[in-house]
Length: 158
Image 1 (cartoon, rainbow, N blue to C red):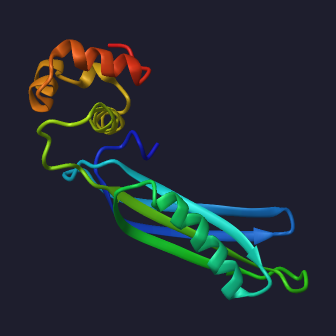
Image 2: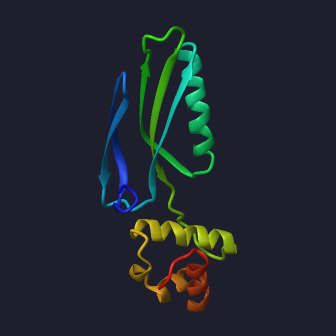
């Protein structure tokens, strides 16, 4: 649902409830529709013998995911849960990320162009019909046929 919503995350709020049968996470993200960027919410729930160990494990898991993105953290939520089991604490870490939108296009490699085209598609709800192929081709400095091929290689049909 978040991927198909245009805009960027300006605020994140969350709540975790836990009980004998499991846990429930509720996440609310405020989105500014005037700033169009890809965005995502990452999460990790890790156990440890204490708060510090559980948090370190959750941070390591989140950092692996963050390393694959280029952007900024818009907000985060952290909760520790210590059930009645001895020596076990859970750290739940939820992070909202707004990805960067490239300002300079110029001549890009095939991979970079397709990465940016995929980002555009995500912003447009993965609807390739919303793309003006002639304008996109002009911005990227390639032909319309090249954009058609990129879309095909990304698994979408126009």
